[in-house]
Length: 494
Ligand SMILES: Cc1cc2nc3c(=O)[nH]c(=O)nc-3n(C[C@H](O)[C@H](O)[C@H](O)COP(=O)(O)OP(=O)(O)OC[C@H]3O[C@@H](n4cnc5c(N)ncnc54)[C@H](O)[C@@H]3O)c2cc1C
Image 1 (cartoon, rainbow, N blue to C red):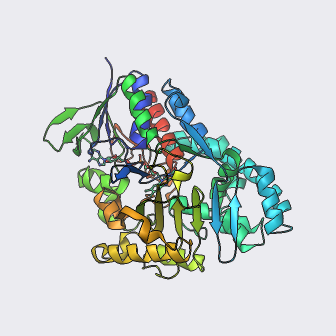
Image 2: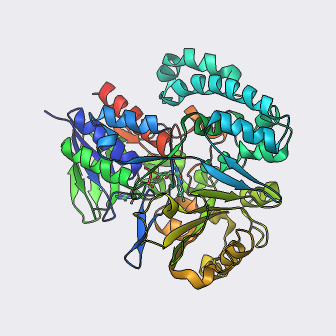
Image 3: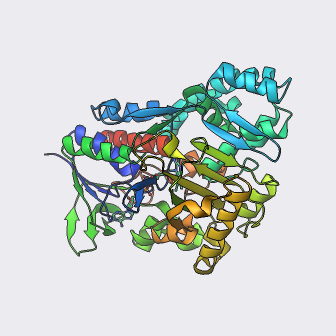
């Protein structure tokens, strides 16, 4: 008889697991509390005709997405139109703007022109980081749930040891290549993808920037959330049932083993295994009996590091600005800006970093002709800061608009806003993101690999985890990998 699997949540992790497991012959039911399958990879529409991605704005390491589709016997290109974004982004410092490209020769030429003499170190960077990624990659794909799985992967772990840059931050690692402060930041700001700072993010994450330069970054025409829609189609084609508007109240257990789920409606359903995709902190504090997950009680979670949060603005405009697809503006004192976020304090209103996505310049399906939608992300402290976002929401909205005028040169932006919406750290929490920490548990060494909540959940038997809060970590490709690892574990434990 087919084994029955419940998946709680239809975010990128839950959907990837649903596609693969249903193809492998399991009877899969996905329960999603919302009326759609997107999770954080969601979308919003303003005034009926301006479309925005809410969370992720680009796909890195597209090969991993292609691979998980193949595991589900599908081809991603049959469902999605991919657009490579190159130049990848523009980086704005106090006195210069650096265009970053995944074209090696063009990038080298830019470095030679803007940072004369450093281009030879770019060559060193590329050749060493290539080796680092080659060694790291098999480790990211492995499971670290128990001594047996660690032993099985011991050869890869041994090979990667010299490349771990233990005790060093990404900033330290890049300091071994480049002299220019700005150039170091060009290859370290990617720590922010994990909600961290280059000064406290483990050194081996230098592979993130390298992966961008090696593989490039992608958009999928008509929203990045099309990826979730495509995964839903494949999962359903493979036989999975996706139940929308079906919030789960808790995971049912007996003798510390998952036996099924209880829906908010009161209905109880039995399953052989339960896969949890709902946010880590949220799941630990809401979906399990406290006694089953004592290791992750609220008291214990208080001692864990979580990522920063984000304040978001989505602006529908009756104008198209001459801005690239992605631009990043660094605070004048970037290190201090990130330190304040890390210390859970309020960032300075007159000196903060922000990111602008102007997707309409590439994707004409997102707004009417001559119009556009701009997405602005400002890294903020998570809710450990105790900020009152009821009061600060409007203040920060106005402050960001002023900054767009002064720093990004969009002087007339106010007169072109047709519609807008903002999301604060508190709003993220209302959406089920613990502490509003949008990039989940921090990726510090003491919370990585074996020390991160295990893919095969260590507290409850027959229960598996697929999200940014488990191994390998936050970000679309790594979350797809967590679902692949879980699918293999379920197969092995069959
Ligand atoms: C602002 C922002 C920008 C980002 N940018 C990028 C980027 O450019 N590139 C990139 O690779 N990554 C990016 N990320 C990271 C990445 O998008 C997220 O880490 C990823 O979407 C999270 O996927 P997930 O499957 O772990 O969880 P989620 O997307 O959070 O999905 C969890 C799902 O579980 C559902 N759920 C929760 N509780 C229940 C319940 N009780 N019952 C039923 N369902 C439930 C939720 O509704 C949700 O659908 C970004 C994230 C954010 C927030």
